[in-house]
Length: 175
Image (cartoon, rainbow, N blue to C red; front, top):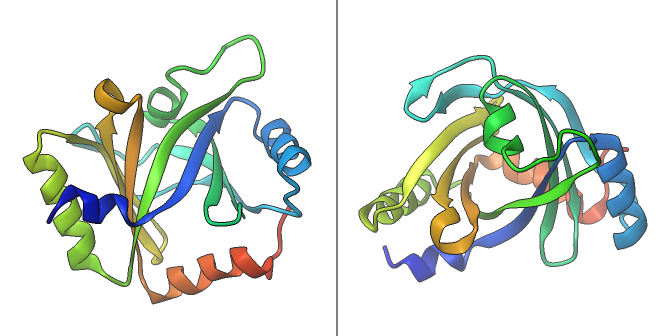
C-alpha cells in the first residue's frame, strides 16, 4: 500500500489538554462549535502500550465537526496514557497541545491492518493500540521525529461509522 493512500484518509486533528472543560469551552467559543460528543473516564479495550498489555489507561475525550475535519480533545486521567498523551503538557498552567492527525478506515479492517503494515515497513513504530467498546480499533504510529506528531490509524465498524456521522448533523447528546 502506498503511504499516500493512507494520508488520503485524513479526517481528524487532535489536541491534548490538562483541563478538559476549559479546552472544550475554548474551542467551542473560538471555532463556533455548538457542542462536543463527550465520553468521560473512558477505559479503552484491548490496550497495548509499547508492546505491553495494560488495563489501566483512562481518559476524557470529546469530538466535534470542524467542517472537513473532526476535531478531538483528549485529557489523559490514568495509566500509561498520562505519559503518552501528556508528555508535553504543563504541570502548573492550562495547556492545549497538538497531538495527532487521524486517518480513518470505515468498515475496512483489512485496510486498517494494511496501513499499519505499510507504515511499519517504512520504519515507523506503533506506540499504542486499543479500541472503544465494540465500535472501533485504533493505534498511534510514532512520527514525532520526522513530523512532530503521531498518526492515528482508526478503524470504525458499521456502528462506529453511524455514530461518527452524527457529528456532522449535531444529532447527539453533547456538551
